[in-house]
Image (cartoon, rainbow, N blue to C red):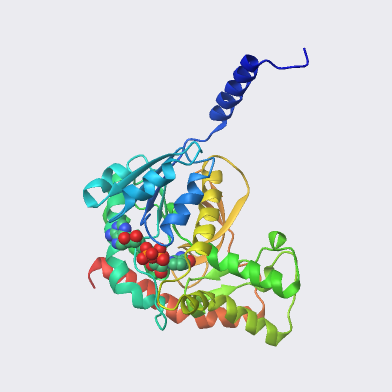
Length: 339
Ligand code: NAI
């Protein structure tokens, strides 16, 4: 008959479900700092991600409430909440990807380096727990100053004897997201088609947008190029000032973090050709950590795609970035090694 009976409809939908369940990737994603301004919307976006089978949320406060709330959303990911250091190990065990947005954000007038004193020890302690409980997991570090917190995590992993530079990433996706948005606006382009690589570090002059390598190809007169590069470098401060003391970028960061983690999960599960910019251990410049476009793969970083061909203007930006970037890296390494 043309009509599907209630019973066979039920059977079909059960079939449909079990079919989609077998297609579901099985990945445990952990968020450390899950109750915060970034942590909550990032957790929401990860709860919606079909590649996530278990979303484990950790914070020093309020995690149970966030987890209970998210657990009612009708998507497959199982949500667990873990509060305080005694619940951290259980949260991390079996993790495929650990995202770290724990730590204090900037207030007006602060640089990202001003956060070092508070956030360095938070990232050190959380990295130690990762090295102990899930040394094979991919680490995605959002906590600022990223230029220093990534070297901190690396040194901690080295000390624990489990360092794999292909699995530790500083999340700089927000710089790319901002560059895409501002350039699409300036050139009246469909933002979904725009991709601007942003290299270097993640603070002020260390953020280097490579407008000459944008897709689609675009060009700006010299003065405009300076203005748009500066806007991308100072975009975080734009948000800090607009929020007037209540925090820094959280919603756009959650979007960017979810985009990066989704790319990472795709690559870890065998999707080919996935490229994201991120801040990693690097031989591309004289700075020992540097963000460039990276080909991601089943084991994390598969191939560093490097800087490509730079315009004179971009070479100047690179020169300006080096002293601050190198100092930030050394500060992170010295913090762990007690120098
Ligand atoms: P927030 O203060 O709203 O949230 C931070 C969360 O971390 C809080 O829930 C707090 O309880 C938690 N936390 C503190 N110590 C912890 C510990 N030892 N273990 C686990 N959780 C801990 O801050 P927000 O706005 O979420 O920012 C977080 C970090 O992300 C800041 O360092 C900020 O500078 C950085 N950030 C990075 C960006 C990037 O592009 N990479 C962009 C925007 C912010």
